[in-house]
Amino acid sequence: MDFKNINDILDFAIKNEQQAADFYYKLSNDSVEKQMKETFLAFAKEEEGHKARITKVKESGEYTLEEKKVLDLKLGDYLVPAKTSEKMTYQEALILAMKREKAAYKLYMKLSEIAPNDTLKNLFKGLANEEAKHKLRFEIEYDDIIYAEN
Image (cartoon, rainbow, N blue to C red; front, side):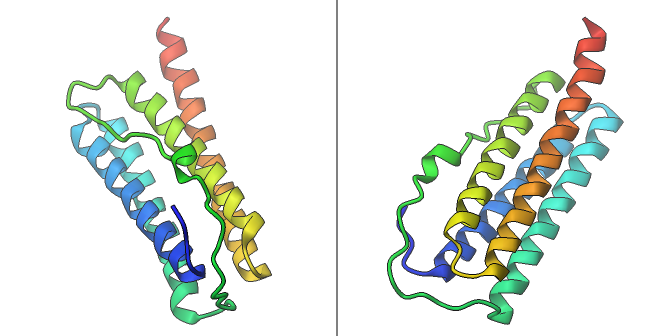
């Protein structure tokens, strides 16, 4: 995917965060266990918070628009199919969530590398850090629940 300017990048990031929130809302709705419903609901709300942060930066204009073409980010490298089903096991949901968080982390780190100013660099690095924390939380949950069962 080619981006023409920083607004294109921010729009993509906003859309990506909304998709992540929708993904976690779906997992929450599909979960049978109360703990999982609450966990996925909390993640959905965090992703909405990320979207709000990006939207605020975009609306405030706290960055310099660059009209030159931004490089191809090879976004396919950072996308994970979000196929969920009501029959998805807790283990499958956690694995899918970890993969999505890892992909989001990589994407935000790449965006921080090409950001035209410190405001955006810091925004994307902060979001990458949040996604890394999410992945770690899912890994801990996986370790505590899945490995404990085996």
